[in-house]
Image 1: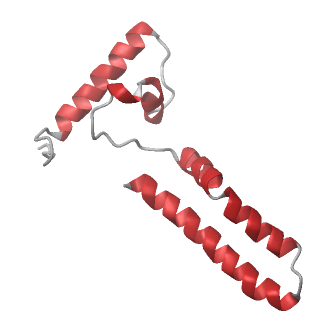
Image 2: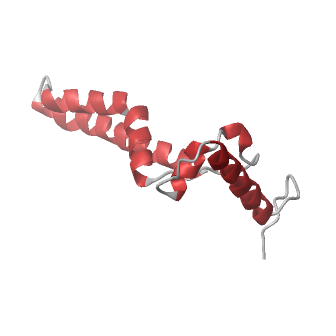
Length: 114
């Protein structure tokens, strides 16, 4: 039994059917087979996907996005760890920067799951 989307009144099956149809149309015009289900979303343009279709990311894609989004936090933490002015500061300030970096990674992952 398909779930009904409260906003549009459509079912999950209808969204999937529309998504698969768009993939078939795209593959007919440029026959390049995707190597995985995640690649379908790359082949199909965003405007062709159903309105509230949620993109699923592979673990590798998630890690790349997390690395990009949190690069500044990671850099600050690594620089503090490598060159602390004092030992005491290394423990307090660097551990705080590590927490900020970890929170950044968790936040980005949570946003991608929404």
